[in-house]
Image (cartoon, rainbow, N blue to C red; front, top):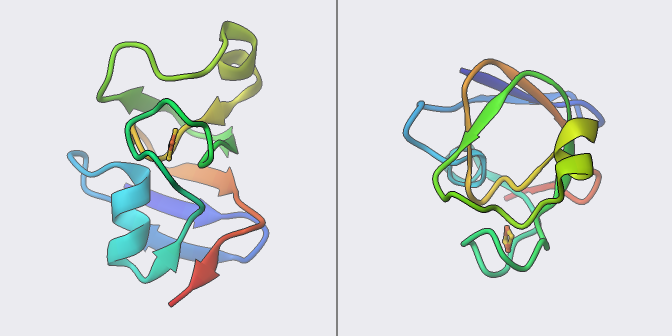
Length: 92
Ligand code: FES
């Protein structure tokens, strides 16, 4: 799966078993994160295209947020190619 950061124009590959956060880190992209288990919401970002599945049953997102396209990259795995908006992302 290909993940694109809309604002920066960066793209990286994600295996279906990697979370978006892990895939980003393997590609040298740092996304905001803290708990890494889907509760603190530090990593929340908008996905403007594509679909994700979650490795935990209840990621800390409301139904409305899910409908609007918000995802938690620390526990979300790309089910399709994804476009996400993460203005605070940096490269290392
Ligand atoms: S890092 Fe805490 S919810 Fe993602």
